[in-house]
Length: 78
Image 1 (tube, rainbow, N blue to C red):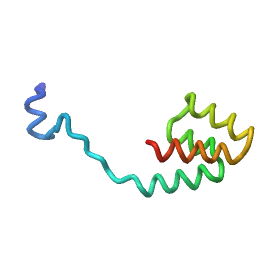
Image 2 (image 1 turned 120 degrees about the vertical axis):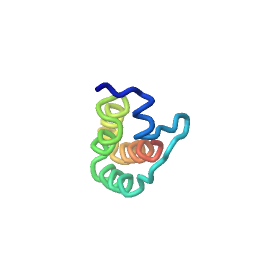
Image 3 (image 1 turned 180 degrees about the horizontal axis):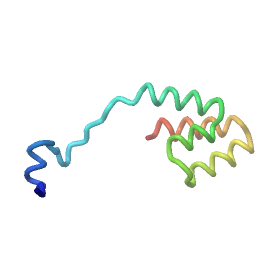
């Protein structure tokens, strides 16, 4: 038997257009601690391999503090 979207919506109610924000504070605190110890890893855990990750590696190589500031900003922004 194939279930239709209407039948599934009765089982799993979907609220379209309503954003449900869960508290991610403990995870963010762990990521910030990781970002202080190793900034590129903190950015990687947040956004993966992307432009922000490579930018953070460059900033960390140029100076440890700019790498930390960028990593904490990326984590706090998302």
